[in-house]
Image 1 (tube, rainbow, N blue to C red):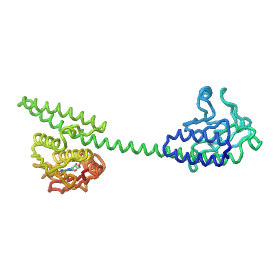
Image 2 (image 1 turned 45 degrees about the vertical axis):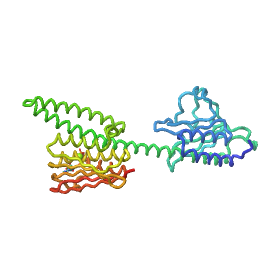
Image 3 (image 1 turned 120 degrees about the horizontal axis):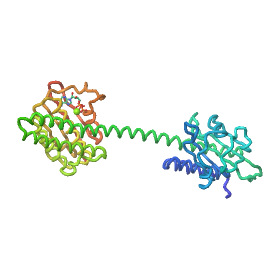
Image 4 (image 1 turned 180 degrees about the horizontal axis):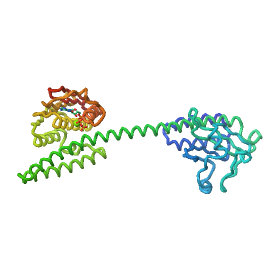
Length: 381
Ligand SMILES: Nc1ncnc2c1ncn2[C@@H]1O[C@H](COP(=O)(O)OP(=O)(O)OP(=O)(O)O)[C@@H](O)[C@H]1O
Ligand SMILES: [Mg+2]
């Protein structure tokens, strides 16, 4: 053990920089505390991250056995010298912590501590923790006892590493929250696309059944059958949206067949004539097929719900290595610029997101009195 501490710190520093990119913050803190204890030749080392309630959110120790740690009992509170360090952001170097006027005693099983050094861990002006050590080996190699000015310098480098690790952890936590928000909006779109359309058809079919029940009980029965099927499909779609599965039919029947049969169902269910046409389509990556299907569904749904059209034509054709979808109605049309992103209208936003999500493009061609065409292109694989 002939290493000089300052060469030791360079090695520790390099190791920490490498590991803080990969590891849990707690592992980084543990390494910092263990390195501090070794480099400063102390019996005990600890790092505490205060919470807002006078306690510690994290507390990492080195030099205390598990059995000892259990015997000591609950985590320390922010009091005495520790509290002063956290409050005043001051470095404390004491020959005997027990003689300090701020010392408030410790629990029965707490190891006896004498000389003490503690540094605040700071992110800018904010104090985010404290790194402290006790009982340096005595006598030191140079004969004296207690922590030195050089120790203080070394410790301040480690405190800076701890600050980086803790700040990274906070940033990571914040980015995770953002990801959750994105996930929530994805799910909202998914539910909108899959489930609210089914529920709308369900409502129409139930109304039809109600209108038929007196005069044509037989046909009402058929409609009710349809209600049951739609409800089952809605339940399936809901489940699929939640676990992020693709529409089951896509895997079984492929895009062309799935879309064709959905168009046929709509053609029968609505007074408008709904047609499907396809030409030369090649197999596409799964995500692009799913996006095409979802966009076609929403465009069809919008055409049948909003446009009052007599005809809705769907076509799906090969476009280079990719594909192009178009859904055209001869209904009343609308001004796409006046449909705001906000509020309850999710359909158009969702279509755009789906297209761009797979590297594709969406065009909305519509004007009052001129009908509507929704076009989508995907690049293929
Ligand atoms: N094919 C269409 N013909 C006429 N108007 C349309 C057509 N498609 C969309 N619109 C108009 O654009 C608006 C926005 O459509 P969008 O799909 O974004 O929302 P929405 O259908 O009203 O609600 P949802 O969130 O349930 O889809 C519609 O409310 C309607 O006024
Ligand atoms: Mg819509």
